[in-house]
Image (cartoon, rainbow, N blue to C red; front, side, top):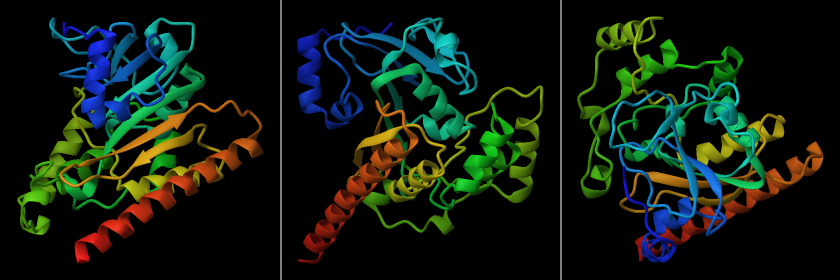
Amino acid sequence: MTTRPNFDDFLALRRSDPRLARLTHDVALPRSRGVEFGADPHPLPLPDGLSVRYVDLVARDAADEPVRHVWDGSGSLLAALGEEQPLDFAIARLFAHRVPNLLGWFRGVFAALRPGGVLNMTLPDRRMTGDVLRTPSTLGEVLEADQLGLTRPSFRQLFDHRRLSVPLGPQQAWREAVDPGELARAGTEEALAFARAASGDAADAVPCHCWVFTPYSFLDLLEELSRAGLFPLVISQFATTEPGSSEFFVCLRHDHATDPEILLKRQTVAIDHVRKIALERRRRAKLMASL
């Protein structure tokens, strides 16, 4: 079991680690209750004053890892944890893109959070990863997965994951000029065999990138879902992919608003606000690069 730091040591770590600071944004300190999704193999160094449960899509069998709970995004997260009281926070590092039913997972996390509770997450930017050849996931795909109530990757998700993935390291695109189309990838027959085998009823769960996004395609998706009345959370912080990195950061809040019109207003204003900030930063970065 990984030893967790005391509160003072945690604060020192957070001051020196922007990623840790973002992933613990608005987490009530020094004491609160929450979950970390997909902490394998190394959970965040959260202070020992926080009550943290560790959740993954499948069970793990390793004595030296945190005790884990299994939740695939369907049903109640609190029931899966054996809890009744709502949570203060949820953290998902490079996790949500592996959830077969992304919208159902968001609803489940929302239901488990208290009003004011936060979901802090990072997602891979497909442009800087092995998913670079894939097109961003669409609203229709997200709605289809929810309509089908997926609890494991679909045939299409598995096929695209194997057929279109290439061996591109997380920082490789920043270090060297790479033509993704020239990188090795699975052929159609290999991907088809993989998807057929992995989608069978008796097949073991396999890691799969069910969803692919860029920072802005993810914002667009949240806006579409919000305007359709299908997304319950409000974005409060957003950071696009930084040089040398392959992930972007999103903080979502269980808002106190219960009126649908008020909630939608807060959602759209917040999305517009963070998008404008991100676009302005991108404009300034391009300007500096051209000087």
